[in-house]
Length: 448
Image 1: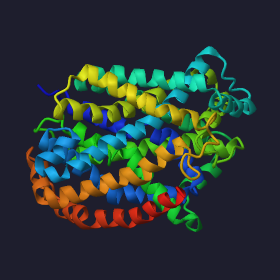
Image 2: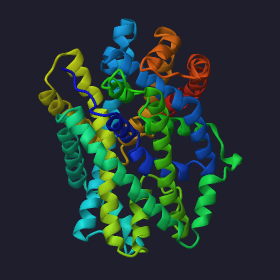
Image 3: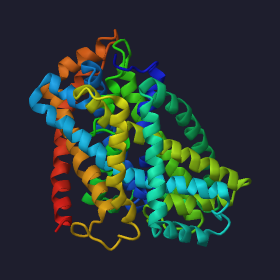
Image 4: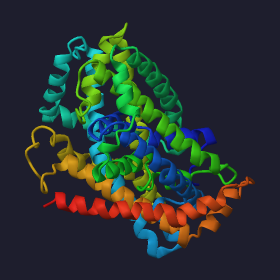
């Protein structure tokens, strides 16, 4: 018998956990810093409302209607579209390959905070610690392996026994801790400059790169386009109200991203760091924030533990996409499949782990190293493409009107059904397609 969520809350927290992860706490703040601040945030939120929320509901609906993995969901309605499910599985592989790399960094910092080797009282040493880690291949690979091991251990226990239970503990704890750190960040002298940078759009900063990066961030953060939400939706009971769920998950995701931005960006300005620091922003800046707090070391330990939680709630969802495919479509046993797939993703992630240090001068294709290639390939190409195809499929193949029937099958009335159908059939696919044309062009030019 196929596993199910034991409660709607469990599904919401797990799906929100998939959305809320390193994309919010690690990637969102540094993306804001490198893409013009408030202009990026405004475009991101606009994409979330116009594209993200309608697609979220479409993905949940497709999964709940078919009760199948992402591959089976498309195949059961029109076998010619099963390739979209395959695309989602492949996308999850590559995202988790570089995602597990950053998960390893977080584990290293958590260990260092506990052991006392993370000297948060010396801001200058924080950048040095990060650089030393990037140039230590053995530690990078070791901690990436441990992170994947934790991911596999949770997924082995299944939906209700592993993913749901873990999400119910980790998500509330993460949210509370982030709020505490954000409040402390706002009390630092000079923090208001960071708030203005974060929330006051400078229209001169808007470029096509900023627009595409905001779109990629939205897809990356919400886990739309790789089949996670379709897969999670497939474990929902038919009586559950999926309409409000399609709103709640993007709302939680956005709230956490903005709170993470408030926790980090104001501190960047207050402490004299560069907002455009890049991937190391969370690892260099936040420990310096903790140093300015009473019991800063304890806060630092708890924070990095919770970032581990956030990373795991997302990584388990990505791994589950691949596992559900093999269990549902190939009738494979969950345990050996999870172990094998986990090992393959770990191996695929090793080049990404080494890309920031030992292999940083190795341009795999064009100027992109493995880490950057995995990131751009998934965030700017595979995820938006998956989202575009999901939109076309639900709007025109499944039919938006039939999707509305599924949404209302639990006894609720979808008052905005006409608007949602119009968005899914016309506005969302056109918007994604226009941006995809530029995204494909820039991606392939970067390979030259």
